[in-house]
Figure 1 (cartoon, rainbow, N blue to C red):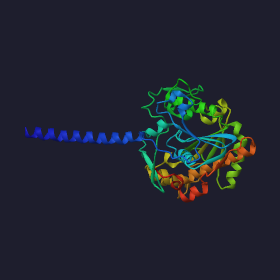
Figure 2: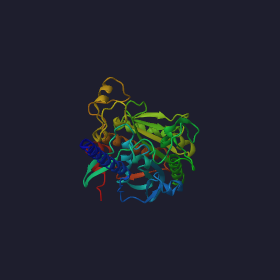
Figure 3: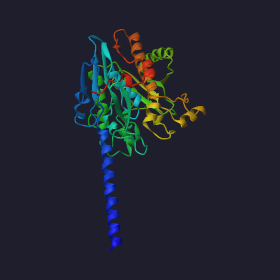
Length: 377
């Protein structure tokens, strides 16, 4: 009897301990649903939601903030999309920095910092990714979620065995939750397809001339540190490349494959007839060669396995002992955006976009990202 009582109490303690662990884990998991606050610059003209352009995403996890900066003088209109893949931080951090700093004197700048809001609410399974990383600002720390490449399965389920996207291309079933395989979207489709459709409606209703999608990729991926351009943007990309090389940024030009459907740089150009470009930087925390994923790796961009792979010539970019820190990747995105806007003006004097107070890439590299993020209020 004594032994039975001992077993009972031991089992009860283990059961209660398991409940506590589950509760704490659930709280941590649910904290991913708490969105970052953006503190836009005084130059903000209006703030909308994606559902303003397509009501099908209203009251869903796919609805996202849209920040519009409009100059007094008419000119060109540009869309800057970050957060298509929430595990590619240089893209959405660059968009945050623009939204929190810029003033526009001519033309219109439309910024969507977190295009796939659902993807920010979870992390990649079995990757051991941290949920957040942070920067020191003048007013304390600012925290950002490190999300997943795909829409949260809690918000879109089940995955089909085979996904046939809106452009009729056959893909793996999980790609049905990849925003950058779902363009031009479907009005009555899945959540991810509705997000894509909403972005297309935004492009149309805001009369966008130039649309940029900000991304990152693993250092072993062949399309890296690149401007991926629709054929209608070939000249624009080439002119911008020359300006970037003069500033010391080595960038590749990659033409958008016509047979690879559903991607922003292909479908924006084909369907909306806008100048469509996707930007890629090198993010070690996405790669297959990394050791432990951590906030330090996300921000510092240094991993000994990649250093070794770089020495062995196994990568498509140089990867030295210093790694490729996030501040350098964000600076690269901002420099490319600046070069594309400058080149756009050179090629069409009727589509001028004048932006003031844009964080200088050289200062981002020197002083870090936190210097240009507004303090929490």
